[in-house]
Length: 317
Image 1 (cartoon, helix red, strand yellow):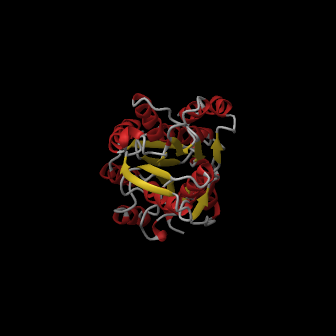
Image 2 (tube, rainbow, N blue to C red; image 1 turned 45 degrees about the vertical axis):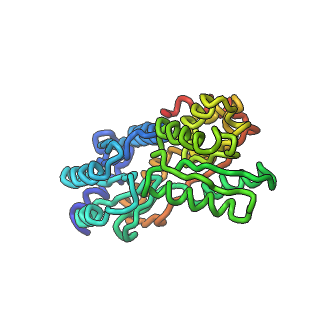
Image 3 (tube, rainbow, N blue to C red; image 1 turned 90 degrees about the vertical axis):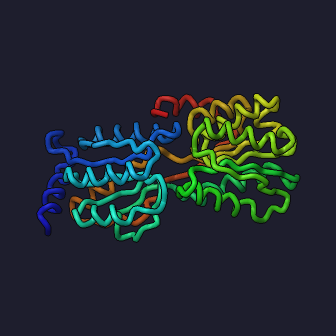
């Protein structure tokens, strides 16, 4: 066994036994473009602290070049493992090869990459296509055969959530000829862009009169869109149905107020399963599955949104 593998194995065997013997893990985070992302960062830091891990954190501010630089810095520092939440799906081969050559396992968090699976240990996330499909099926059931013109707020162009949540939603509504996506544009996963793009949708669709529903790839864009709908003199959740993904506290506030209709949960605790997989791998070489799926759940106005808000509001969102 190579010396680095022996050393990191020893560190992980001592996992949690002593803070002085804690291993070092680098975490390249996309940024803080959404409440969900902020909660993932908070929970990752909490999980590391609870397990006695020295977490080296890098905020990429939504730029892939910053993430690549951070990973190379982690490699140079000789970290024992790297967590990567990739901003986009492509362009990772070279830096992942560098990590592999340095015998530093990489775990992807909540997003996938278009690279050979041998270049990373595992990926922890939800089934992003399934999330979109659940949202689409909810809308099919909600409109119950009525004609429905849908506007779509997409996530960051080229990111796996944007690609997969769009694919899934289209699958979910595929058998419903009464539902049509009439406009689709990126809101970059942010509230500000969600509001701005929704304003353009409203202007293009008769002031909103021609829009039946909004599908947003995340809750933050939906919250921004809700503000735009209200400023246009319409009632979000009634005049325009709203379904989105993530299940952040603010969307539950909106649901409790009747201003949003449904959300599909994406748990922000990706680090717990990631650290568990790393611990087993470093201890005795146990190879995890290439994809560790987290649970997703549909929430509607019938699922105690006020209570869900209270349960989530202190999680770092």
